[in-house]
Image (tube, rainbow, N blue to C red; front, side, top):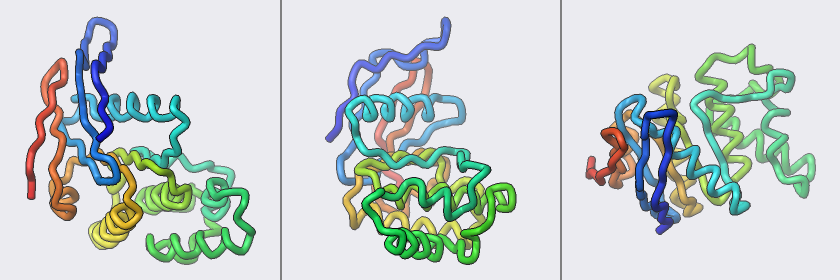
Length: 200
């Protein structure tokens, strides 16, 4: 269990978190839910900054894809692969992940040529290829069409479970959580309080 205690975050006179504590299960998928604006993204940014200060390897999926517009899909993905990989190994890994995320024949396209859902899938592909020890995902499946969403969720959850990755996912969709059959950390109020809820 990773424990974060005495979290205090304010914006001017607004006290968002006061002496807040949260427990993150290691090598498991942790879900965070709460109403819009409650401070979910602020909390995981705090956690992410804390992990980076400890030189932890983190794979991140933001709400927006944050792809480099001057590089095509293949080049955006190639950037995160270990320099020890040969060009052939990189090609094999990239083509495999593109196939799994239903992005075949997209490697030469640039971000502006992709739909919003496709850009988000490239962002997910990038996180998987980087393969950090810890995954932080802020509404990663937002904007995906139903067919792609279900297939990608199954693939990602299977990957995270098999690799025993410590994962934090912000979600507004109960169905995304019940597929894993795990508890969820629900944030509410101001200053924020939390409770563990069982959605299975």
